Amino acid sequence: MELSRMQIKDALDGIRESLAKANKIANNWDGPICMGHDIDSQEKEVVSYYVELAFVQTLVLLEAIELPHVRESVQSVNEIAKKDYSQISYFDDVYLTWSEKLAIYLDSIENALGDKKAKSITRDLVQVIRDTLYAITDPSCFSAPPANEGEVHARIEAVLRCIFKDLRHKPPIAKVIKNFEPDTGLTSERTLIEYKYVSSLTDLKRISDEVLADTRGYVSKEWDYFIYVIYETKRMRKEEEWQQHLRECGVKDDTQIIVLPGEPRKKSARKSSGATQSSALADSH
Image (cartoon, rainbow, N blue to C red; front, side, top):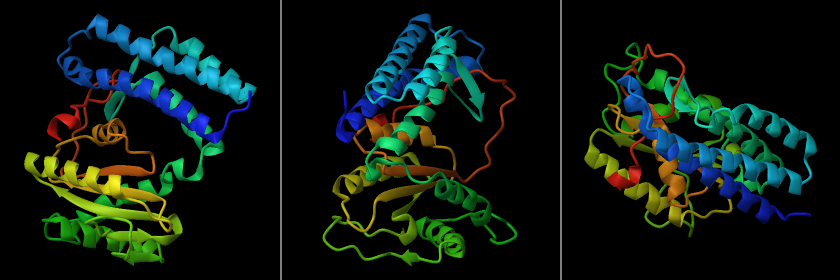
């Protein structure tokens, strides 16, 4: 059976939805783990159900699009995962082991077979933006961290300009976005960047509203991707929570949020075992 690209995309969206449901439950496990409590057994069963469902959906899709070698690889991972679909791991934050593992295959399938505009923003660009945090908060360069959105914009753009010679400051966009003027445009990456500054829960709700309003009105022939860079003066919401919020609100993978923490992240002494903490952004929206 030959599937159209739209059918493949719909199938991938269905698999990601199953994983999102599992991740949403597991995101609340960080607290009990920190306090040395056991995770609720019923929650683990529900998480296991959705992760197993995602594996089955992926295997069926790979069978349908005739990728036997990839299917064999996913099946091998599934054989290990079925021992405990709710297994958790830790790297800076806690996360569902097999959800993250399967997501790698989903990204690969999407990149190989999906529509161009459905592909993710390049990892290199994302990493470059993450790395700007060290420069924009360097005490040898600035007397203090960024104090407002304008300073975040100016400092990050100065770094990006050294790498992307085609950078455009506030590129004009005709007849595409209501009440929105992008801060930075990277022509070669076909990517627009908007900077946000968060110092309070009030800022958090306002920015959530602004992001959703902008993404719903964003259409352009010149630009394919959109990044929101959110600078926090202190930890408000984790990046994973923002991403989950976008997907639950129907925003596609061509839009991404990068969170830059304005205060140093404290390393935990805990060893490997958990899922990313989350509190639904929808509650603050």
